[in-house]
Image (cartoon, rainbow, N blue to C red):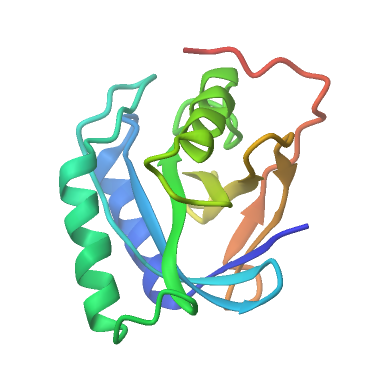
Length: 172
């Protein structure tokens, strides 16, 4: 089980960016502090705004620079502060990964150049009250993904999206 908490800065940033993006998908990478075995606090995230109403593809170049800068700001302590994984929005769909999202994340975590033993994928949207709604999944090489717990540092700041895994996530 993984537990991912969004800090106040990330909650405000996500809400603001999702409002600006409207019905278009946006995304980026998450930078986190590991606070325990399988427990992380997302302390910063990058944002890329070039998605469509049904698709988002991350450009790796600016996000690599974001993570390099994050490491520098955190005193180059990768065992504590590091790249946690990817995030993107599904403003027009459930805030859960599509089949394509699951497949792409598994390929990413198994990519030898990636040099990661674990990655997370967060999918978010705004609910009817304009609060964050989302889900988080963990990926390891050679293993099936696992559903994690996503929450905000403030009580009630993030609502989890629950969907039975028997449903198909096809949409791309």
